[in-house]
Length: 254
Image 1 (spheres, helix red, strand yellow):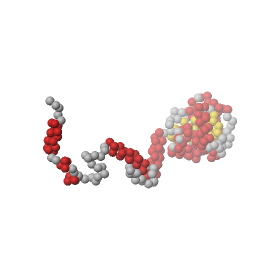
Image 2: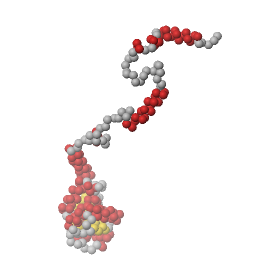
Image 3: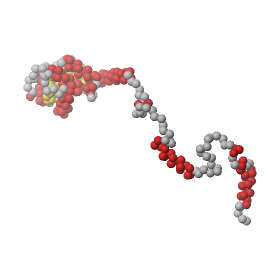
């Protein structure tokens, strides 16, 4: 929300302390929000009625903002054309006007008369708006992009300093959502035991143990050549000769 910006909040406080004033602002820096918030806060402080002169398209939003910030304030939102129809303001009354409405010369004088009669006047305008009400407002406050950005950066630096000074990084267990690090379960126990056993059965069925396949449960290490069957130690040339002989006997008939 724009009113949470440090520069806007300080300007609202200053306008309330001064009992009114002028808000000269650049587009996008919260001039309208500052006008409504300061006028509502001043009326709440004084226990006085509040009248806001604003464009008809913004009447509902203006009433909603005042009701949210200070629901106890009795607020009337009117157009510039309605200014001539207003009764004399009550003592201590607060008037807030956006100067864009004074572009129409037909409504300028009635708004001026209403502003002169108000005990507390707040005016917001762009650089290109009509400055007629400037002389009736008290102290001037400016909201521009440079000051707005500087205030934003200063606020972010303060926040970052406060955050890093008391920051304690979470432990691995906290990041993983666990209070205690868990030891990985063995595949032969826990929920994977059945799957592991089925896998080993399939391996045994596909690779049955035979004479030429070593026992998978035997300890790892070099085989004991002396304990192996005699035929495994025959020289390779002898085995080839024997195979050749067998092959010649089983060859095709001529």
